Picture 1 (cartoon, rainbow, N blue to C red):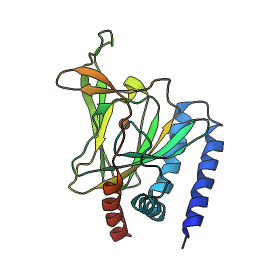
Picture 2 (cartoon, rainbow, N blue to C red):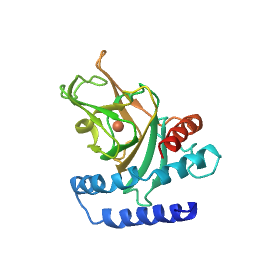
Picture 3 (tube, rainbow, N blue to C red):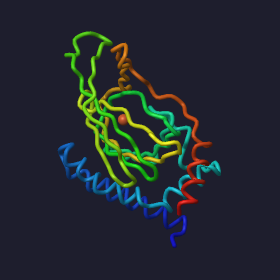
Picture 4 (cartoon, rainbow, N blue to C red):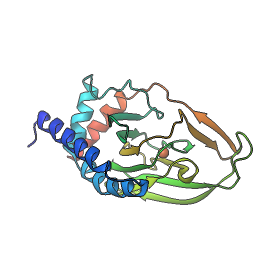
Length: 219
Ligand SMILES: [Fe+2]
């Protein structure tokens, strides 16, 4: 059985390996392919997530739940020094979905427990009118634990993800080097409006306690 220090060492070694490997790839497609193979290794690692959730519930300085993120339910666990990638996790309440949004980078994501629904959109307008965006849905999928999906930057990756169940779900994601943009775009399907979202402060401790309870009972 792993001790906590072993867990920390193992994960740091893994992030170092990712940092070295990802530097070899020039194209986003290669990086996405690489992380779609690597992410499931962590998604299966219940001990790692129990350790992280325990640290949060105990008020440990790592991970820093005050660290600002664009999504209030998201915790950043690792940011590569050259910003080649970041590693995060997020907890979704029953029925909780993100707004429809784009990203400033590619991303790979999956779930630790509970299914994650992904709803994808394409943009039908040409982007010439400020704050206007007409979208149509292009597909939906349900990720089971350790399945992964990916997203692309800007208009190629407009989506909403969320929890279609009546229990918490725990997801994890890796995002690439972001474009020089301080916001993501959010889309209102009914009004066909598009507006920027900037990083807010977050509240995560209570959710971590609930997710920890479920994860412990499943392990
Ligand atoms: Fe997203």
